[in-house]
Length: 289
Ligand SMILES: [Fe+2]
Image 1 (cartoon, rainbow, N blue to C red):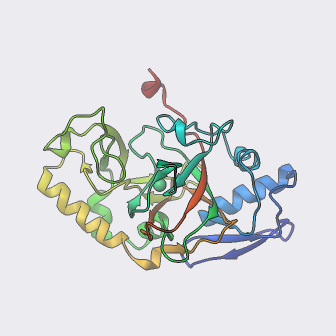
Image 2: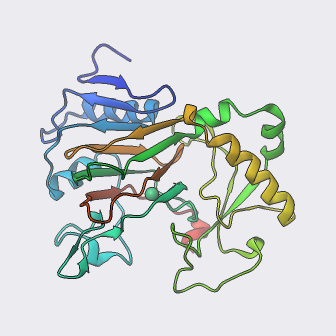
């Protein structure tokens, strides 16, 4: 990294993650500062900014430096009024009504919305209230997982595509507008190569999405399940991960194209309040038609 980068960069784990220091996100950022943050994001896959004090307009403005933002279709009641690009992720209920989504349960390893033709390139997650224990978010470098993949396993997935099921939510529950199926080869969703080059860095990474209801296109179910089990066994390795223990005022920004993430459960009586923005994926001509 050039000595002219106007902030500090401290790696958080060998495989991925870096803390950025000396940058006040409330300041108007010069173009070259934004470009340097973007480069650090591409280099480290997950960036952490500690001790921030952002309101929703400021979170939105900072996020927009990195691309257009998604709205939150279907989850509009969980956006703060006047901030349609911000989604509240929380277990807190006020007057019996949830203020946000995802509750207090565990979320297993996934890439966000990989069942779309063009999944979101990344997300930013800002913590307002965190439990004393639990609720950690873990990230996995899919570059590192690929770099360490045994040659025979790499040969077994090279050139193959995976179907990413769109009909179940992240808790494995069938979405209301979808039908149940017995055979994962008929699952709706998007197909992506199992090894993909990152569109900005060009570096190849394993792209898995979710384990549940995935299907290696063209394989019989038994072969697909066996291959997916081997790949997931390889990937679930602490050597490829960074575990984030949240403090209030943390902003995390992850690259959804080369990482997966998961969340630990936490005490239902504790409060966890996060505000999230998500960068918009770009639809292909076919998907938009
Ligand atoms: Fe997620």
